[in-house]
Amino acid sequence: MSHIVVGIAEFKFAEPPHKLVTYGLGSCVAITCYAKEAIIGSMAHVLLPHAYSSSHDNEAPGKFADSAVAAMVQQMEIRDIGPSRLIAKIAGGADMFAGQFMGSDRCIGARNILAARKALDKFGIRLVAQDVGGTAGRTVEFATESGLLVVRTLRGEVKQL
Amino acid sequence: MGSTPFLSREQVAAVEEIATIAAGQAGNALSRLLKIPIHIGVPEVANVKLSEVPALFGGLDAPAIGVLVPFQGDIEGNALLLFPEAGITELEEMLFGSSGQAEDDLRLSAFAEIGNILTGSLLTVLSSLSERVVVNLPPFLVQDMAGAILDAILGEVGTLSDEVTTLTFNLTGLEDASLVKSVLIPGSAGIELFLEAAGRLKTGR
Image (tube, rainbow over all chains, first blue to last red; front, side, top):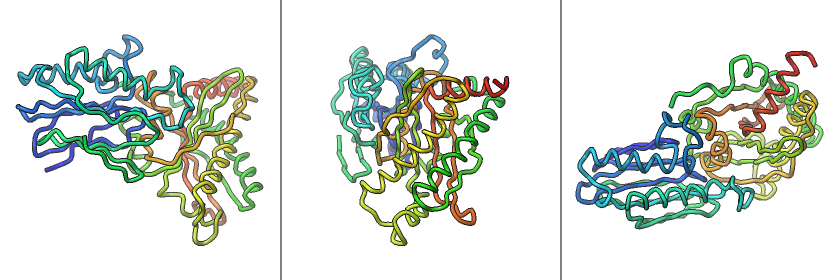
């Protein structure tokens, strides 16, 4: 078994026995999609809700919530897995500086969460679990064998989704 | 993820020149305030790809202290200063004695003050060169994973580029003993100020 690291603005796929892991999520959101029958998982570490101009069209699709979900769906379809067979879990979207950006357009964490939910909804992907918001950073580990998402904080909190 | 570098080589050199002036002033101010000799040398200015940012801090989940300094006036924005926890022991020993132990609030307020002085010096130099009125506001503090703290500024810069400009300051004490490394990431407004100031510097105005 190995851990496949998903960096900022990246999205990756993995099959058992591998795990997908992404570190230090603040306002960023990890979006995972899992095909239980095919036993394959995908994770994106999105930085922003959506591209702000067409000049971003050629950028990494994993950078934005909307393009990340679209790219994951496309890659799953290549494997003959339609979006209705996927379940999703998301984590992240914190407001690290406790209210500095709260309620403004610059509260990127909240906007990332909303954009991730909308993008999943657009493709009819069921969001079955989430650990979002708050003011703490998160590291998440996604087991492709079971679809289990483990979320850890620096304060020692551990959640299993 | 290819994209144009955030700053050209010429602009990086200009930012370095401006930051060096500010670093000298900040070093003097910190020495007076903390009553210990502190020198801040020529900062290292670099364009760093998003994928390479974690290496600056020993990983995205490495513990760090973050100081977010908002500024306002003719131009508004934020600058983020990060202190990787792995490199702060020497400074803490100088500030709090050989045990290096202090209450979290005290530790954080010390780093907030360092961040305030460093960014305040930078803003003073930038304001003077660009002839724009800019003042820094009280800083926001957080202690968490470096990557999580970085998101606060990467989200802003990331709308424009796949690279960020980083200014790495090395604070040294007696006999050039390394005290702490801090990495400053100016937001989009900060970069705009730097470039205006650099333009004035170049034309000698």
